[in-house]
Image (cartoon, rainbow, N blue to C red; front, side, top):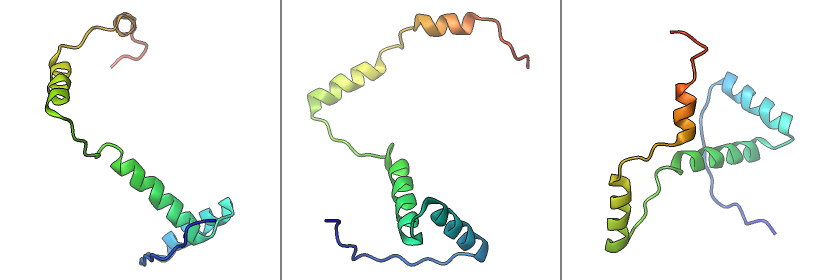
Length: 90
């Protein structure tokens, strides 16, 4: 059984945006409410994906910092790729 929807958001938008959203919802066979909810949740996940807060104990933090501070190891595949002649001239 789906969770009860008891929260509410209100928004104002111009007529063109309203028509665009209604058309997109109709195309997907969704209500405007479901379309906006799905779209907003997807965007929220996208925005927050790289903004997560994480906590490490001191030992793990020190290990993490040591790994980040190490110089990058060359990847032979990338070296080979960048050694190829460029097809597009600048």
